Length: 315
Image (cartoon, rainbow, N blue to C red; front, side):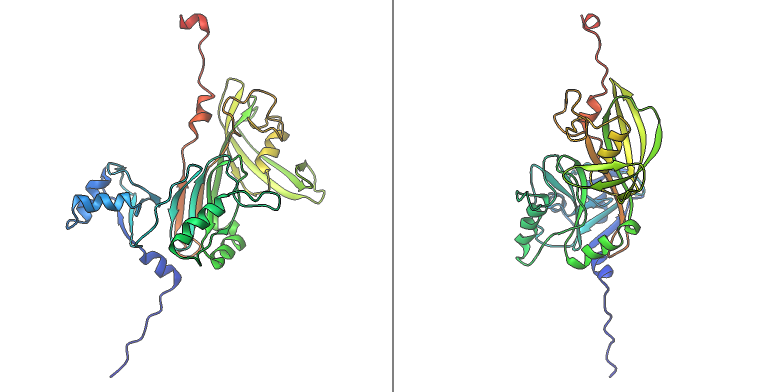
């Protein structure tokens, strides 16, 4: 009797097998969609799936039962059992699988520990979270956000995935964008800043010619001007330390709330650095699937551009 050949599954096969996926073909609410795809499941069971954070819409965990789906969206249901609930006031998980975690961190939280700063960080908080499922589980750093910058960032869940991401970062990451509020009204609607940055001590110095620093390229687009400020979108071609902050200072338009690079010349009405990583798109390091994550511009940024009527007009 001929033995059956054992088919070895690749890591990509295993990662994809963790989810049941459905394509949305017509507009409807999420609960209605789930009920149509899982006719044998009770409404209570479907609500439980949502509350356990195992339903994803376009790679984002979605718990809202009446979430409006549009044609072309993709709904996935994780088959992973016993995923631990995660809540923290300074960060939330927007995507997780066996290989990576994507989070949105708030301003004020350090990404990773340094020699001088040993306080709680995004990495240490996530380590505690994954270790609830097994003491051997760990989180590995891929890239960083400054303490005072909010937004999307990614961590790996094993060393091999970390190496893949770090060694192929520029090929894997297709889009990484920030939104910021700068002092003064930008002269140009769009432009590119190129300089060489050198991290000598605490401060990053900026030079327009190659003096041994790292070449740094930032593309920007002005979204709105008003109230003596500019709302701008920034696309990083390179990711040097404090690159955006130094480049905007070099243009004469430092960020609101940036005391280090000149943004404290005026009152800071939002009590934070006005920089947010709102978009992160990359090819999954194992499945090679294109992953796209986006968060709204912070409402505090938008409020800075509300026109205030003179007191005489308000009476």
